[in-house]
Image (cartoon, rainbow, N blue to C red; front, top):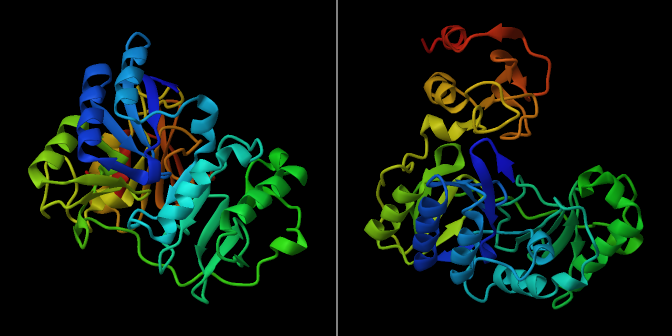
Length: 360
């Protein structure tokens, strides 16, 4: 995707997992071919920013050498699979994600943003992350298949889990779902065979910065980290591998717990309550700077904060306690709102926003 600072190149780690060598190679490639910045998305994907058109092919070669590329664009697009990041070898999440990956060719042609969540731990942790079809733990202790927008899921028989998921994807297309674009917007009733009868198990908590049984969790302000800082964190902590999460946090496997430069160790840090898009000049849609303003505002906002460069609100789809929106080079303010909602105040300078919120 072309942005204001060059191309943004997406990398989808398989099962959200990268070995330490892959992380270091990715960081080196981001510095050599891009702006040295790495983003983590709410789909647990990685993005390398600031890649020039002349550097793109060399970056692809480096990513291919790290085994971070798919065979073709279609496979990469279909492999939109989000997994609970604390999966263990040979557990339900791992083998289901591996089977789905191996059977991607059996899926119909789906709208490009549609995705799957494999959340088969004892307590589902991905319920607030975007997905269209979910395999997750049910209240009975077994697995269920749940379509987004539906409270109940279909109990699954063992070894038929991916069969049923593929069947549901074909129903989505056959019933006109492609026009809706996403499962949650599809108004057709589920077929009788897929009608949900079981609720998901009580949700678990998302990972937060701090020590973890598998190593250490480190947060990313705005979901972004300098490649050099991430490489240093891997080397200094002794991490053996890294799991990418959808919560602007990285789980470093086998890492020595402790703060690392450029990453967030305090789980209550105000920056982790703030969402801000890259803003101007990095996004051509934005007319205002965003992240410096968000950094200044965050300690003075008790709840959630969203600073958006335009009314699209790409960084946060849900309402924030305080939403600051760029419009024609100035800022609007809305409360308990999304970027597209009607603002309470309009046409403010950055200094006026800071004064209004008590941050000046």
